[in-house]
Amino acid sequence: MSKLTDDMVDRLVAAAQSVRERAHAPYSKFAVGAAVLDGDGQIHLGCNVENASYGLSVCAERHAVGCAVAAGSSRFVAIAVVADTTPPTSPCGACRQVLAEFGDMPVILANPRGERTTTSVAHLLPEAFGPAALEQRESSKNGE
Image (cartoon, rainbow, N blue to C red; front, side, top):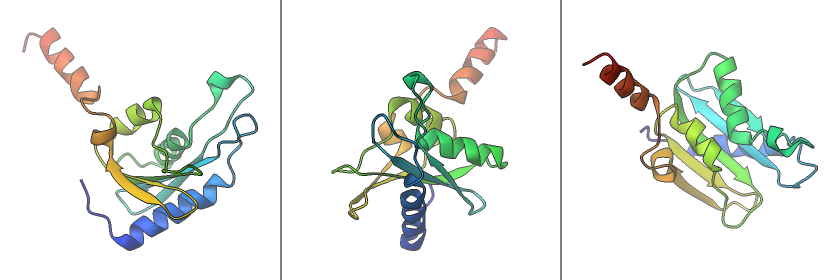
């Protein structure tokens, strides 16, 4: 897992805070912003987008990952998530699983009041189902 500088953490949190203000959360009023740092140093943003058909809503973290992938990135260094909660809120289970697809990385949780905590994907989702499980399945299927 990469070591982040304080400056990079500040930039990620500021980016997530900024995009949070664009969230479309008319039902829950729970605006969330996320910023993913890729292996090339680019920051990709996402905010939650709710839908009247609740199951079709998209979380900020998955939105940011999708934007990063659409931009050609697949190696992520860290993610920051900002929501107006005390303490700062962590990603939902679906977002944890999506993040685990791209490996372990720091997860910076923050709120607009400046509270921050850093955890990791592995800590948030221990023993995650991932690509390795599928590779093991293919190996056993082929008699290896």
